[in-house]
Amino acid sequence: MQNARDRLLLAAAELLEGGGTVSTRAVCERAGVQAPTLYHHFGSKQGLIDAVANHGFTQYTAVESSGDPLGDLREGWDRHVRFGLEHPSFYALLYGRALPGKPCAVTAPAHAALRERFTEAAARGMLKVPADDAAEQVLAANVGITLTLITQPEPDFGLSERVREAALAGVLHTPSADGPATRASTALTLRALVSDDPGDLTPGERALLGELLDRLAR
Image (cartoon, rainbow, N blue to C red):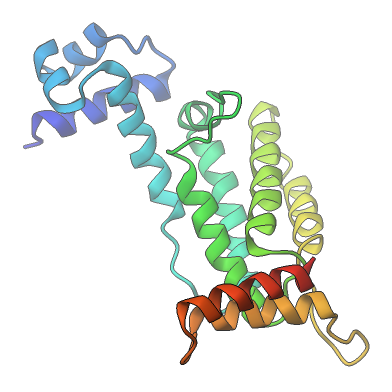
């Protein structure tokens, strides 16, 4: 049998998915508890909604690395789109409450996961821009196409794929004999490798080297 906290999460999620009124009374009636129980576990109705959103969001950001950064990035993009289409109310809750100058703590795991994938790509000499910049650009494109597809009567997955490849092409390249590595891409690669394995460098040396490599990458 579910405990009161889980019943409250489920009740709020079902009301959100069904487009119903997410009031304290409605949630408590659906969960079979009294309002003080909601306040005990979540502090407020907004606290409950944030917990529901965070739970739903972490379900699709928890992707293990396969060792193929490009494949992982494509899979992560497609999972993001599928999540939005399967849970439009959750998605609107996550990305529809933007406040000027205030990053969303709930969606922060998506940026962190992307940054990790792009750091792996940098270590392989595939990155054109710093990992943070790459994560920002790709996440912005991913969110935009997901919101667009949600509004379409018949989602155009071909459009998502084209936007995905254009976004990735803007931040990644594949080194080849015909396309030698640039100073910037080499600096980004070394930056990622040193971050992963600093060797005998002191913290001060790492900071200085990181600053120099960041300048070279720009």
